[in-house]
Length: 198
Image (cartoon, helix red, strand yellow):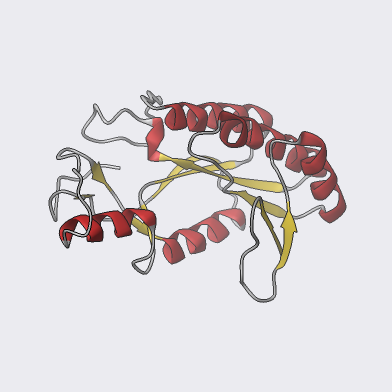
């Protein structure tokens, strides 16, 4: 098993950590060409970098397709504006942020390049208290930081372990197309509970 990184490798034992900049198509082609993996999970993104988030997805999809592999592309609920109360897999993206637009463009490209790929739209990813989202809320709640939260931002948080398990399950499955992979409970960072939504 191999994993890639842009600036620093992970620490998981038994994994070969390889440097890769998904913005460089020739590097992606070379790495995929050498490994010829059965499945690739593309979770690469940079919040403010169109090239990494959108073009990187194009480069990965092209390389994986050329090698005959299976692609699971990780997308986001940021492809939606939030104007609707509920979103399902058939809803057309209507992003309002540059990041959401880059993710929507990546979805379109992946779908066009690799018809058998899975696009896994996820929501707010949490961990064991150390995610940026959790740190922000804890800092505000304990008055260690000053700031404000949206009062109408409803998300379905998913634990990183559950998300990883779902992505591996999708990689081994026959599923294709868009799938929403998020937590079961819709919550607000402002209030403890909120109506159901992605």
